[in-house]
Length: 198
Image (cartoon, rainbow, N blue to C red; front, side):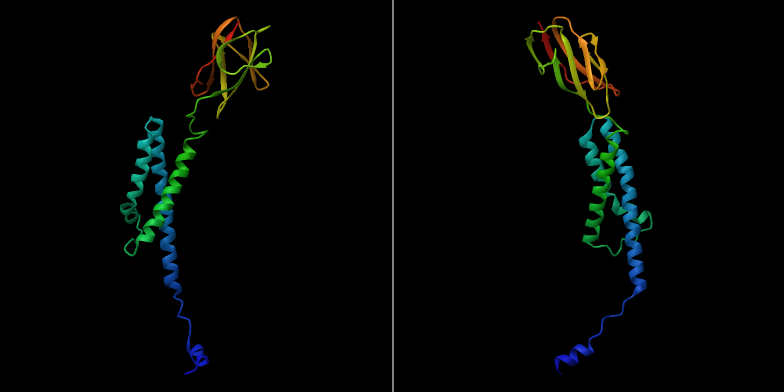
């Protein structure tokens, strides 16, 4: 038999449209169930993180992933024909979806977990940074730039609350050492920035 005759005899296999649709619908249903299961996992991780145990929150989320083996049959997903690659695919979908939801919940407007920072400190227009070395001043006018992921609500220099105008907190200091501290709406405070005015 020649090569031409062999090529003429070959025919593609019959396409089973019903089986294909059934397989795709089952895969879509499983993927939706996996993504929906990441929501309570992310909420659990969020709550544990707010409680101050972020490491436990991470492993709790991973633990929720291992429950997929029992959760999928509960929501009527047929897992009898699943192979290792199917489980690995669902595990990857779960992990990245859970991580995305968890990170989303840990940022504003849902949570503010970070403290403000003192970006720049200057006295009478001269940048001095944060150090306790005495700075000879004229009018002793301090200018502070502070930042936060939500917003700085107050900056204090010792007992003096600075006023905000045009992105800069300003005030007049008396001589001596002062702790510059920024506060945000969640009550977090920056580490003190120590300046000394002579």
